[in-house]
Image 1: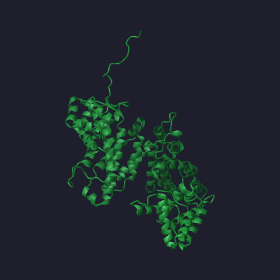
Image 2: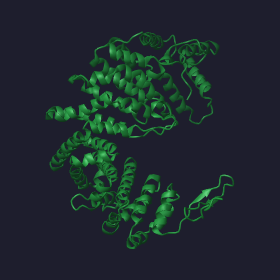
Image 3: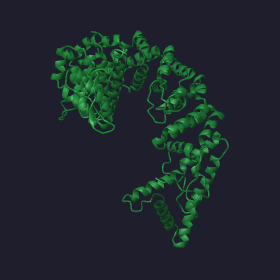
Image 4: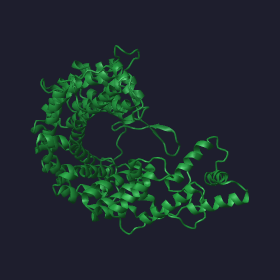
Length: 606
């Protein structure tokens, strides 16, 4: 879509059309809008002309252009308000009064559609990036461009005024600013928000180093902003995971934990937001092509994850025991609420599980989790969510029940994802697989079966799931396959128990067949079958083959899991070859395996 016009060019065109074609004021406005739209979009013959025209008109209004006659009553009022608005924007510093006037104009501005306060914040957020696009100039038909100063002014506004009032306005605007615009600009805007707003405002020192009870809402907004700034951006994480900032997060969790019950309940949103920030700081999710810059790269230009160093620092601050205590409390609250038939929305429980999973990437952290009794709490949570009764027909008729089932699946996914990380520990994986008291293999398989097997109220072969739930189910299948595969890795006794006692291989194969759209499920399923077959007895391998593993694996090789499928077929004793494309001829050639071709070396040196 073309960029916005300037107000002066629109006004000049309206007057010119009115005089040249002898049109009324209303006809001149309609003619000018249609003319400028066609000039900018070059789609006069488009079949969707009407819809595109309406979107173009909305775009102009978003940029403050009044599509009215300059001499009409409404046009005069709009342009006067624009003049006042631009004067406010060009103020050298923004006071509380100036910002409130800006928001008031945005709320009532007749050139915009939505008159709500949230829309005003969104529009002011847009000004972070395009303040000058609403400033008139003499260019022919394009609004001027240039670096926005609104973000700097908003940061100064938050610093120079009463911090409770200023932050209550500045932080929502900054959050809205990150939510607007195309995804291609998100990374640049994350960097700009960090360096031009987050750093100057110094919210860490103002909100967390001083105990100000009245700014709890501002703390939550600040944490949400940090989460958005760091998500998928490794250089920004490197800045935000300094020791003082991490200590502030840990202290926040501990202070809320030690508070009385009333304050603890009030601080639940704050605790949840803190866990979400810790989760994103301890997870590598920067796969952008722009990631090779700043302190997140090494001397080769490769992106370097800061997750392990962050986890090590947090471990020394006692984060595991604090999260375990929070989780135990949430598990107790959940047990009481389920018993009373009045279950609350367990969003904090979900945030705690996701945070623990992001921390469980080092063997030392896993040992700490076991030592504080985390396994017992997890087992209790697992049992409660596995035993929750769900009626599919009721979910179809009750939106609230559907939301509860979606949350249940999200928590199960986070919980099994945590078990997946814990199973990387060789000693713990055996406990989780074969211990009579702490084995999770049975509940793990039963959980996945309950979500994929047909029910008495359905006539299809699988449980009907909504589009929103399908992605969660796919992720859950991936976690189950990966967890069973980790338990079987280098542990033939675990593999034998999974196959012969629990029939776990059937669940893995079924997940692969149901999620052919997901290369991740195919890869983890192939790895799980490979680990079950490697070092296994002939009986175990035959059980895998009898279950139809070979055709499923061969199909997985065409769905993004070539190497993994080859390894699984090889360890099952099936014939398989790897083909590689010759870069010169383009033909597929068999890739030789180690040991098949004699080594080319001279045994004796002359």
